[in-house]
Length: 211
Figure: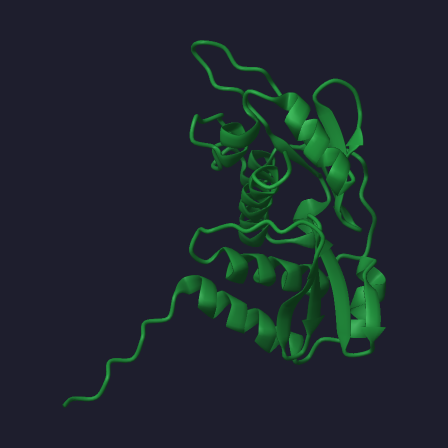
């Protein structure tokens, strides 16, 4: 028999391995303090994400607790999420949010498409029920800012706004997620776009387990 072919590495696997490599030289305690994260020990930081808690350490990023048992079945989701959590700790950002919010496309000069779509995961779960989005948001710690608008501290220095726009016969509902304009200083655009996708899919998954 010939040698077994080596399994081709996926892009999200390579990215995660690169993040773990960068963590080897990271001052985890110092970075955690600067980015507003807690540390159980000098060599590990804790970061929350939609009811989950992850441990970030030099040997990798792992799920340690989950208040809501949501899961996202798409291939690569967990690797992508762990990578963007690691990049948050690794960020060189040394400021504070300015409470001025914009669409993700603002950072890509219009290249990224924010138009609503019928197959959007948030529209699929919450499109006919802004009330459900409100209930899920309350369980996760969203702060209401009026009808169909919520503020959420995704990470300590990464506030977002979630907005619900009702659709009609021609256009689907739209549920944009807006970032503080300093988000592009926390992340480069590519991992920020990955975080955007992870957040939307995870928030939809939470809605599948909370009535």
